[in-house]
Length: 241
Image (cartoon, rainbow, N blue to C red):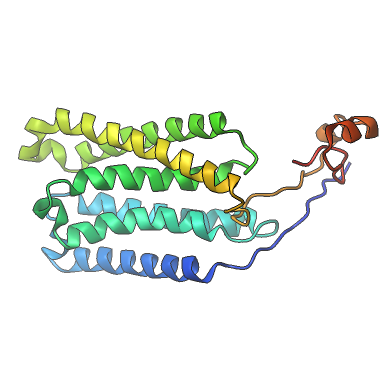
């Protein structure tokens, strides 16, 4: 049996689209100037090269994946892409303004907020809006704690092992990971609450249709089952939410 997919296109949200493009442009400019102008961005001894490699990869990962695999069947996920891009841009912009050294709690705020933003993006990209709260929180914690751990490991090997700050790194690492975990849980609650209120319904890829395949076709529901469930039958006989 051939596969059947229904392509739904949503208009690009103008504010999010503009903010996303601005954040990507600002990120590239800040990274370029930091690489070309010594001392620019207050990133001396703070892992400039790993940032210059990792941030563009993260900020342009979703556009690349969409162009390669999602474009024929889903509109561009502007909201999720903006959340990822802004997390990278905020770190660079915070260093540019020297907020990490001048504002004592700025590092903690970045770990809390940025881990939450990345978690929200992952939930929007990988879960349907009908997903129960327990599953949303499970994924939020799994991704958030993992992301916080990966960041701390990358931070250590990028610059912390040579920095005088390593003497107090243990307490700082525990604090950063805890704040990241809390941010991810809050992000899970926020996304779920917005879904329940009918928001984020047009965040792609969020297909409300099934994709038929030979395996799914063998599990077709009978008309009586569909009638009892109160759900609408899809083109391949499975149940729509």
